[in-house]
Image (tube, rainbow, N blue to C red; front, side, top):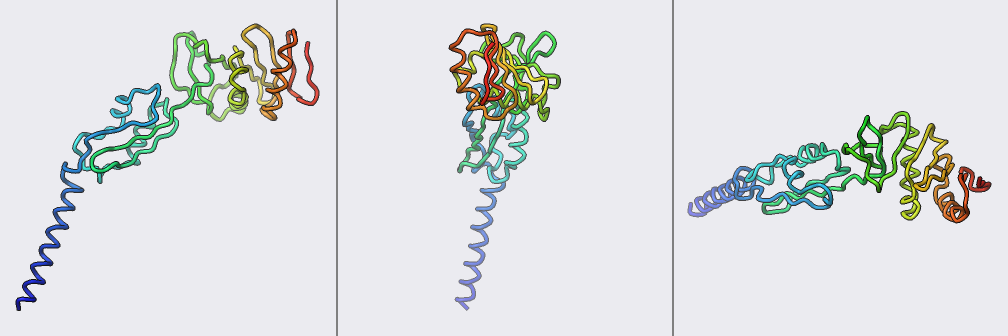
Length: 222
């Protein structure tokens, strides 16, 4: 009989321990969110990301819907990717990759900053001097001409990209550049960007008004 009582006692004890553990993990604030740590932010304030997460202090970490938190944070347009994970005992870790500004697009009297995917992240009163002005008919994600122009800009090495004042793309195959000193570059399509950039850097040492590298095999200078 003692063995039966002992087994029953141990079973009850086990159930009690499991119940307490479950309460601590899923219902109690003991293992609740104490901190939201933001990683990877450079231009976006951590406080803005924390507010967008919408997770109150003390909410049990185990029941936080990380997919829903990611969805809320992704509404910040300057964020390209976000990953949320749990850091026990009480930290929610938010890893973000910010969208990198690549060009600006005229929007009435102002300018919209655009990333490599064609996403407009913010509106500015004046165009930042460090970013070229993109001129296309339909500046938006999915537009072929916009995509081609942004691909060209993304492929330019830094020393060449800094010379560009405007990128024009009437079509995906007719991308051209206007440099800050007024010279023009006929780039063509988005194909063979490394070859075109290398050739252009060499050609720019020669005085001219227009440089045509649309066909790297046959370049012209006027």
